[in-house]
Image (cartoon, rainbow, N blue to C red):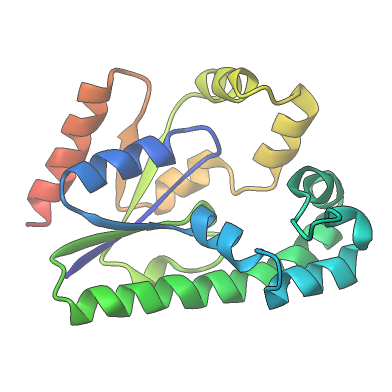
Length: 195
């Protein structure tokens, strides 16, 4: 099995790249989806988050209040580290379990989408890493289109490794400022090299 790790800056197109890879028959798991799973009502991670950050981050019906938690952790690096200490080991365990299932099932190509791939030191788990990137101008425009205020955009970008560092560390880089066809062609080239 060829196992890819996919990363990139926020708003640079990881989800789009993931969709294209899935259309090409690559088995895929997105750690953002796993992150939502580990904080579902009743999950130990949610209980820990409530203990650490208070009742204001959990709604009366037991759901995580993502916005309230984000305001806390993206304005305070120590708080973000506490959240990551709760979340990252659980997310890591889930994607590693998925990789083992793929191996047992003799999947030929698979990919784990990890926004903080290099930040968490996960790159050695993969045969190759792919970084999706775009210009800072395009990134900022996309995040504004999502309705994010400029302050929130700056905080989120600052919480990640600079894209230049991710590009330097990655085995492959796909540039996401053109059409979907151009993006897909770059991915097809990578997949062809890892037949």
